[in-house]
Amino acid sequence: MTTLLLVEDNEMNRDAISRLLGRRGFTVLTAEDGEQGVRLCREFMPDLVLMDLGLPGIDGFEATRQIKADPSTAPIPVVALTARALTSDREAALAAGCDDYDTKPVDLDRLVSKVRALLGPDGAS
Image (cartoon, rainbow, N blue to C red; front, side, top):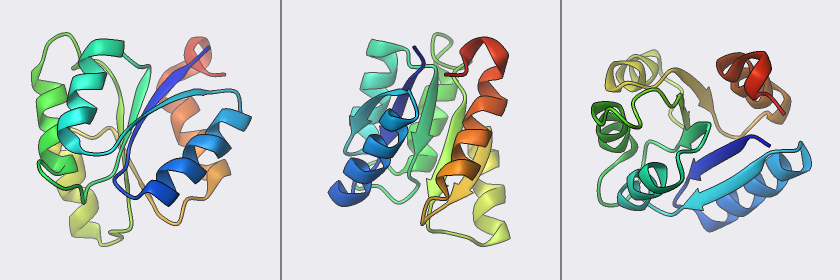
């Protein structure tokens, strides 16, 4: 089964997104902030990370840089998941190491398509 790590500080968003993805057949781990996200990524080695950019403490940009700087977690795809919809925000997320970018509110079909495209046929649920 494919494991996703959702790093999201908003409890309602975290709960709703994780439940929706769970119904699509994914196992979803959650983290409330960037530090916890980096730690859980190293500990559980998820197949993909969904990273909110506006997090308390270290933000999603820095958390992504830390994940991508660690040789053990660098290959894990990271999708920025944010309400920031400007082109400059997308460019900053990709520059920080995100492999893709999606906006909130979440369009579940679009998000699942991006997840499956990044994971390829062997990693998709």
